[in-house]
Structures are given as C-alpha cells and as structure tokens.
Image (cartoon, rainbow over all chains, first blue to last red; front, side):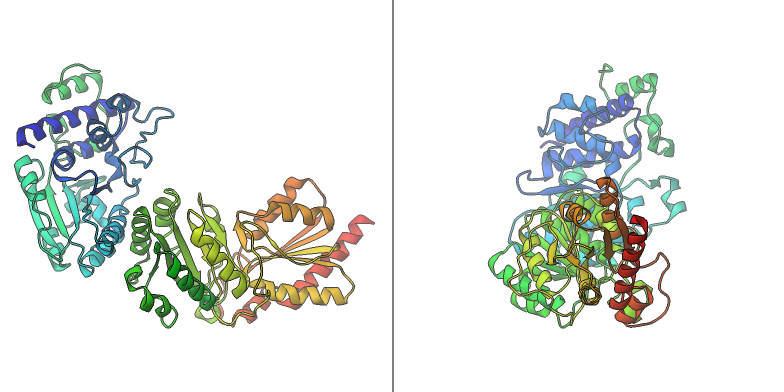
Length: 265
Length: 311
C-alpha cells in the first residue's frame, strides 16, 4: 500500500483512539498514539492476515488495537463506541474473544514468551506463519521478556519479529530515570538478535523495514522503533500526563482538528 | 508416579501427534523416554518457568496439547500469572505437571515443599486440579487430561510409591474412588496420603469401627456427591492431605457446612508455618499428625467426642 494511504489510516486510528478514550474517560491515550503508525503499517501492509499472528503485549493500548481491527474488518467500526462501556467486550486491556485478538494482555511481559511458543510451533510444523509481538519500553523491565529473548535466539526463531515501542516514557517517568534500557540495541545484539532501529513514525521506513523479514536467517528480529508518546496531538506529545489523562471536550475538538478529523461523533 | 506418568505419556503421544512435552530443565533420567522418541515434540525451555509456561500457551494456541513439567513449586507458583492469564484465562490445553508434590522432597527444605499448590491452583478459572494417590491413579488421570479439553494441574509424587489399586481401576472425571465401604466414619484422602489412610483404616477396623475410605484425586472438580454421601451415612468425616490450609479440608468443610447436617469434621493437614527442619517424607508427615498411627488416633478421638455429643 502507498505510504500516503498508510499515513491516512494511522490518522484515522489515532482519531478513533482519542474519541474512544474521551467517551470512556479512559487512560493510556499517549501509549495508543505512539503505536498508530506501526499498527497501520502492520495491518495494512506487512501482516498476511491468514497466516501471520500479531500480539499486542502492551495491552493497555487496547483502544487503538480495537480501532485497527475494526477498520481492518474484524468487527463493525460502530462497536468502537462501546469501548469500556458496561457489558462491552471491548475492555480497557486487550481481551481475547474480540475478533482478531490473538492473546489477552494487560499484565506486561506475557506476549513475547507466547509469541516464542507460536514461532516454535510454526518452525516445527513447517508453517510459513510469522509472529509479530509489540512491546512497550517499560515492559522490557519484566524478566520474562529476557528469558524469551534468550530462548528465541537459541532456537533460531527467525520467523519471530519483536517491535519495541521506544517512546522513552514509562508510567512513573522517563525510562532513563526509572530503569535505563540503553544501550538497547547492543543488548539485543549481544543476545544474538538481528536489530533494526527506525523512526517509528516514518511510514516509508516502517514499511521498508517490516517488508524485509527475516532480517537475518537463523536470527529473531527486533525493530527498535523510536517513537513519541502521544504522537500526532501537539499537546499530548512526550508528556507523561497523557499516560493517565482523558481529554476534555475542548481538548477532544482540538485533537481531532489536528488529526484532520471533524466532528465529535 | 513419575515413571507411570512418563510411560503413559509416551504411549499417548504415539497415538496423538498434538501432544508435546515442555520441561524447565528438570527430569534427567525420566523424560528421555519421551525426548528420544518424539524429539520434534519435546522442548527443554531451560531454567525459565515463566517463559516455559508462556511458550506452552503459544504452542497450545496453535492446536497442541502441551504438558509442562518440573518439580515442586517451579511449574506452578514460579509462573503463576502465566498460568492464570495465558493458560487458564484462554482455557488452553496446557497440562502442568509437578513432580514431588507435598513433602516428597522432605530434606531439601521448604523451597521444595509443594504444600500450597492445590489451594492456589484451585482458585484459578477453567482448570482441573488432580493429585493421584498411586501409580495406577497417575496413569488413569494422565490418560484423562490428555483428551479432556482445557488446563489441568497434575500433582505427582516422586518415585517408589506403593501400588494401592488393581491395574484395571476405573477412574471417572471428577469422581472419588471408593476403596472401603463403612458407616461409622469416612476417611477422605487426596494424593499420596492414601497409603497411610488405608493403614489407619485397618487399625480402626481392628478396633471395631466401620470405616469408609475414599480416594479423592480431583481437588477440582470436587466430588460433592461423595461428600454428601459420607455426611448421610456416617457421623465423623476426616480429610487427609499433605498440604496446608486451603486444600481438600477447606473445600470438603464448605461442602459439609452447606449440607446443613451435623457431623464431626476433622481436617488433617499441615500447619501454616513453613517446615524448617530436615526429614524424610514419612518423618515430616508424622511430625504433623499424618502418620497412619496419628490418623487412626485422630479418627478414634473424633468418634469418641461424637458419641459424647450425641449422648
């Protein structure tokens, strides 16, 4: 798909997330906005929907995953309006049973081990499936990830792609101040992974990088996507507060205006 | 029991290609029987139980029936949230096998005592929780959980347990096994405590009591019919388990209370405090009132008290 079309989809996904979190008085909007471009690229360009599996391990960004799945045709877009409402299946963290969701998530550090199991099964069954797992940077504090990182390299799972949403903010502050991950690329290289670093909002770069899997035969791949929390809405960008806050009606209008969407829905 | 388990699993895996065995670097000289025969369905995940359980969930999500295997609390408590969220929440075909349940690793110390596992596993959704009493029960329930959809927790002993049943034992899912019929009291045992329970029953028989003995391998689902039967037919019920509070004694006690009938109920079990001294399994059992003699004494005392209450 053309880069401009993917960018337009990313804007639509962002607008959905802003509206959903506004109506739900929900949280984690900044975490949704930082992965909008990645999700647009994956679901409209990279993933072969019939074969590949995608796990959103940072389950708190559920709103934008639901938006992507609805826009991709897994369920009606109208249902997004029920996000976090009583009796809706669209809960605040990713929940299986929602069409298109491979794994419930919400507690961090679960997606990559499960992805390793899926990738190992694909290898042993000679399946062409590729497994893509998206984690947050703060999530990499969890030791279970490093068990899996060790495992994936040992078992040469080159059908496994890990994407790190490296927006440099975790729930209490800057990653560098809470528990520093750097040098992150070096860590993955030392664990025998094939590493790519990209601007997580540069659609052409994302499409080009995801389009060249596997990066290295016999090695699992990791894309360290340098992103901005809250990307796309000026007053939400790179601000910890938007890990928690939901927009006021006035902020909603400004955000949708900036995203090129009109109307409050 | 572990030998019975692995023999049965190899037998099952020969017929069912979905069956995988994933261990956490435990099982030397036991698991080779499976690993050598089915290398493509065997995995040593390393000393990393969280990852092991996540991998098992990932495999199960692609249609496999996955047995995870380690000792004591390593495949259960170490990776509890993976069991809860990845396995149980998704109702996956992952069967968690813990070798050395209870005090089987007696002298290894408290880290190796699996004495809260049944309570913790029983609190999770969708899971079947089983502690077989002997190699015959172990074989039967292994066969059962291999085809029963959904998660299971299988607490095994170690090696060398006495065989207490004939090899043609029929085990029904979620049902207790009646070994002795009796009308004065009922002894309900889970897991490896059955051997001492049977010896205690013999002593009580010699003292003139009519003793019902039930082996209850299923902690979940609990055989409430068998408990209500014991309530209806006897006046004293004891549960016997190598486990602390929150296990069989707690669930049977709740069932008895809900029956509304007056019986004397004595849960024989371990205390809440960690055992901090060394000892063989049998020595540590005896220390906590779980020897055959102690079970018989507790039962007799309960019977005498019951008679005083009823006079």
